Length: 494
Ligand SMILES: C[S@@+](CC[C@H](N)C(=O)[O-])C[C@H]1O[C@@H](n2cnc3c(N)ncnc32)[C@H](O)[C@@H]1O
Image (cartoon, rainbow, N blue to C red; front, side, top):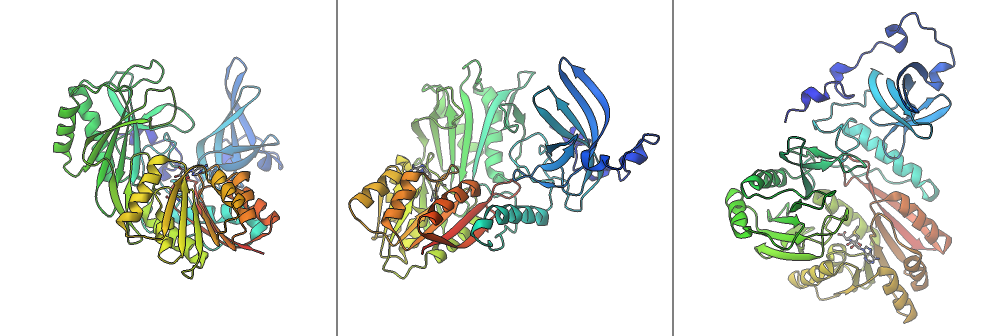
C-alpha cells in the first residue's frame, strides 16, 4: 500500500513547509503585538453540536516529556504532536466545551532539528513518537528529559546512543483485522486506540520478523483463517509475536489464537516453515479472554523446542515466549556493562538480582560476585533463568519465583544480608514493600535499572529519605525513535 500520497500534507515532509509567515500569507489581517505568545486564532472552521474547531498560528516553545510541542493559545497551554521548539505552525484546535485537541495543519517556520520520518506510517501509527526529529535532536531531547527529572539527585552522564537506530527490536508483535473491503490486514494500533493501521514494515522491527508475519497474513486466506474481532469475539488469529535471536539467528513465531482448536495446524506449520526455513520454533498461544494482554495462559509447541537461545555479554540465554528479554540487545550490552560496573563487585559480595527475568543481569554479574540470588514473578522466566544458569556453568546463582517485595521482606525478617541489590522493575517501578525491606537489609550499594525514569525518581526519593545517596546516573537509549529512555542509577548507603 503506498502511503506516500496520503502523507504528502503531513508535517515532516520538507517540501510541504512554507517559510512564509502567517502574516504574509494572510495579508490584510491585523496582528496585535501580544498575539504571538498567545497564539492567533484565525478562523472558525467547523461547528458540530458543541464541537468547535478553529485554526490558529502558534509558536512552539519547548517539548513535553512525551515529545509533544508546547504552545500558548488563548491563555491556555496546548500540547501539539509533531511540533518542535522554535517552529511556527498553523494548528487546528478542536474543543467540545471540556476537552481541547490540537493538531498541526501546516508548518510555517521549520526547525533545523526536523527530519523527514523514514516510515510512511509514522503520522498514523502510535509506535514511534520522535521520527520527525533528527538523531542529534532525539539525543538532546532524551538527555534534557533525564537531566530535568534527575535534578534532585545530580547531573546524569551523557546518554549512550545507538549507531544504527533502526531495525533494533528483537520482538515484534502484530495484530490482524479486516479492512472495510473485508480484506485481511496486519499492523500496529494507532496511538491510544484500537484502530488497526495496516502496514507491511515497521522500521524499528527486525526486518526478518516483518517478512514472516507478512507471509502469515498472505497464508491466512488459503488456510481459511479469520482474524479475531475484538468486538464480536469471532475469528481465530489475534496476533503474531516474532522473537529473533539477533546473534544466534534463531527465530520463534507465536500464533496467538482465540480458541484451542487449530484445524489444519500441521499443514499451516509445514507451509510456514517452507516459506521461512530460518524459523526454529513455532508455538500456539491461546488467548480467549476479552483483554488487551497479548498472550494468554495456554501454550502449545507446534514445531521445535518452544524456546530460542541468544547470546548477550558472552553468555547464552534461553528465552520462552512469555519471558521478558530486553528488546534492544545492542544497547542492552551497554546497559548491563554499566550496571555491573556500578555494582563494583570484588568477587565476595552477595548480590540480589530483583525482577531478574530470565536471569541475564544476575548471571553476567555472577562472574564477579560471591553469590547471586535472583527473584522473579513470571514462572516461565524463572524456569529459563535456572536453565540459563546451568547452560552457562554458573554455580553461584539461585533463582526464586515470587514477588520481589515479599521475597525481600522475608529475607529481612530472617535477618539475612545482601551487599548489593540490582533491581530492574517494570515501568510501574518498585513498591514500598520492596523498598522498605531493602532499607532494612541495608545493602551497601543499590543499582537501579529502569525503563521509566518517572517512577525511578519516585523510588530514588524514598531511598534518599531512608539513608541512601544517589552517586551516579547513566541514561541509555534503548528505544530510539520513541520517547522512552532507560536510566541506571548507582545508589550508595550513606
Ligand atoms: C524490566 S523487566 C527486567 C528483567 C531483567 N532484569 C532483564 O533485564 O531482562 C522486569 C521483570 O520484572 C518482573 N516482575 C514484575 N513484577 C514483579 C514482582 N512484583 N516481583 C518480581 N518480579 C516482577 C517481570 O516479569 C519482568 O521479568
